[in-house]
Image (tube, rainbow, N blue to C red; front, side, top):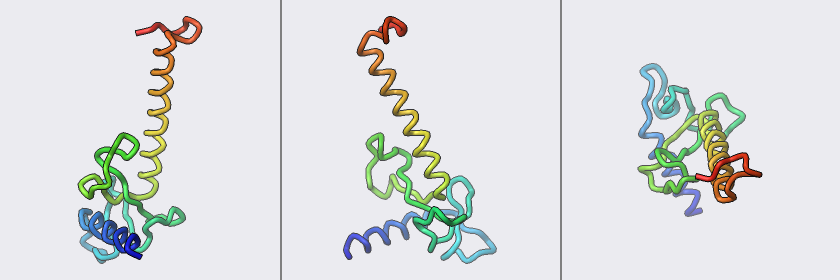
Length: 113
């Protein structure tokens, strides 16, 4: 129960950082950082055109970002999924490059730096 309440307050705080529209109820509708319209009650719903999630920004969690609210923002789920996917691909490429460097190159194809 305490964790659920804390999570709700985190959502409310992240929601409060967002820009609202002049024509829609700001308690229900806001724009995320990419200008996508999101609906408060659609939190966590990837089946909704207006669903959103909490995103670790500016430092992604995968790169050591904290759970502090200064590193959390509300973001449309599509934007959050894209960021996670791109970060994952980038980390995989970096790890592959580091591994090749450690081995002195794969069968001499990659020069050791």
